[in-house]
Image (cartoon, rainbow, N blue to C red; front, side, top):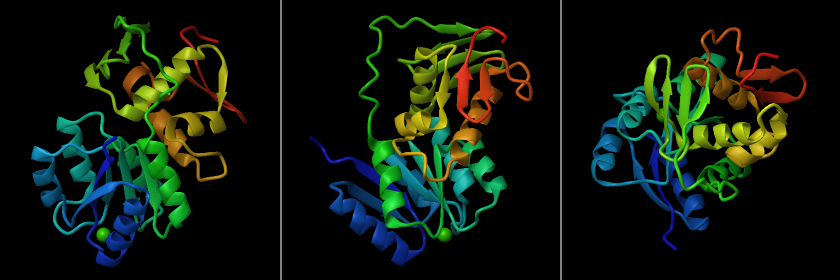
Length: 233
Ligand code: CA
C-alpha cells in the first residue's frame, strides 16, 4: 500500500522538522512547505491524504489558504495548527473549511492521535451502490459524491463532514454521544479537547438549518451529544 502523503505548511523550522520526523516514523510521506503560496503551487500537481497547516504564516495566512484549498478540493482532510487558543480562531478555522484544530504547544501523542484519526478512512461505512439523496427539509445530501443541495444552493462536503453525516443519518432519531462522534468521525476519544465537535455542528447547521440559531435537524442533547432528526421534537 502507498504511504499516505501529507502536506505540511509550517514556517517554524524546528517544529516542522519534528513533525516531519515523527510522521515519517508513522510511515507517512511528508512534503513540507513554508508558505501558503508554496502550498498552492504544490497542490496544483499533487494530491494529498491530509493537509496540516499553520495559521500564522508569512504572506498568505492559514485561513485564506484553507479557503483557497477548499475552492478546488472539498474533501481533503485539513488540520489547522495555531499558537493562539482563542475560540474565535477555532470558529474562523472551521468556517474556512478546516476539519480539526490543534493549539500549540501540543503533545506529540495528541498530534499523532489526530493525524491517525484523520487518515483513517471510514471503513465501517459501506455505501449503498445507488446514490440516492438523503432528504430533510429543503436539503438533499449525496454522501457518495460528497455533495449536497441546500436552500442556499449546492455545496461540496469534506471527508469529515461526510463521516459525521453518515453516522448521524444511520442513527436518525437517536442521541449520539460526544464520545462516539469524536471516536468515529475524528478517530480520537473523549478525554481530548472537544470544542471542535460543537463548532463542526455549527457549520452543519449553517449549511442545512433554515434558522441555525434554532436548529430543527441537528439537535443538541444536553449532557449527551447530538441527535439528527427529520421531524420536530
Ligand atoms: Ca507560524
